[in-house]
Amino acid sequence: MIYELRIYHCVVGRLPALLKRFETTTLELWQRHGIRQAGFWSVLVGAGGNQDLHYLLAWESLAERETKWNKFATDPEWLSKRSESERDGPIVASITNMFLQPTAFSAVK
Image (cartoon, rainbow, N blue to C red; front, side, top):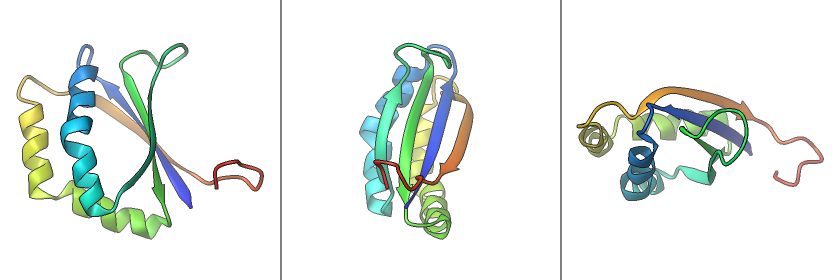
């Protein structure tokens, strides 16, 4: 199992819109595409700021990620709903992502 850590750096004041989009749209579409989330976090205290959303996705392989993510990213329903959610302007200023591999002693495998 590998994990993808994605950090969405929101346009100031737009984090609530991003959270709403995940709750009402994105998670359901991910489920249809077989994308597995391993958790979501916002920053309570620490570096990064309170306009960021951190989340992990779980993948069997990079090949699985490429196939499923590309299908999701081009899904006409996703494209329409994403556009609709950005009627009041962009939500995400930038995205940081990385792929993580658990160590032999990790509690998460």
